[in-house]
Length: 181
Image (tube, rainbow, N blue to C red; front, side, top):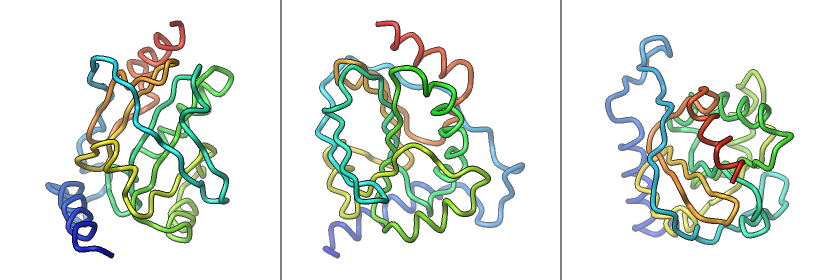
């Protein structure tokens, strides 16, 4: 691992865990947010990665769909907390032109599989491997978790840093509005 990648990983770990006691129970933690920051639409950077099964997923092939792109890691407490709500959102909108891409940063498939085994319901959406953090850098991700909402034209229209309750009615409503366009 290059020194820069190590430093980036260490910085993300510090960002992700800052303010959270290692032994804190979920009930002791603040609620996850449910808002996204609207942005001036801008073209999404390339995103072409393999999933846990080795299948390549390419964001460019998802034009015409609204896509939630979430950068995360298993060692990040807010990332772990938001994963079940991301699955509920994916299931709630599965019959619509909506996709979820969860980009794991810097970990291998075995680590993610072990994490998925701890969940009540394993994610059905693609978990993509950004093992060298190159995609994360291209998307200018400053901390984990970071989420982007990409419209049907392939433009980033909203983002958020920090854990989210993805199936909150406010967030689902924002996504449904994009689906109408």
